[in-house]
Image 1: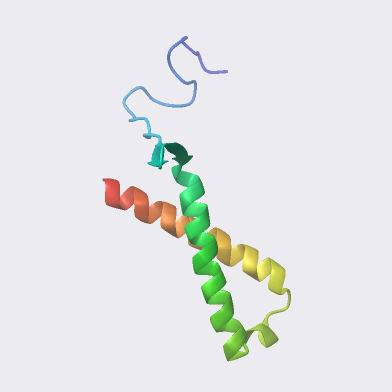
Image 2 (image 1 turned 45 degrees about the vertical axis):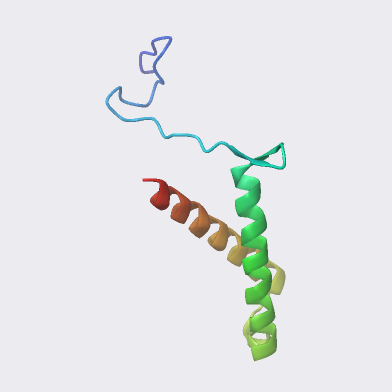
Length: 89
C-alpha cells in the first residue's frame, strides 16, 4: 500500500499535472454542463449518420443495429471530447 499524504493522491506522482475540469457555459442565465452540450451534439451527429446509413442500405449488413448505434454514439462523443481538449491546449 503506497504512502498517502493528506494532499497528494496515492497513485499520482507530484510532478504530473492535474487535468483541468471543463466547466459550464451560460445559456440565457442557466448554467449548462459542457458534457451535456457535447452529448447533444454527438446525438445529432449520430442521428445524421444513422439516416445516411439507412438510406444506403448499410443496416442490412449490421447484425445488431442498436449496439452499432450505441457504439457509434460513444465513438462520436469521444471524438468530440478529444477535439475539445485539443482545441483548448
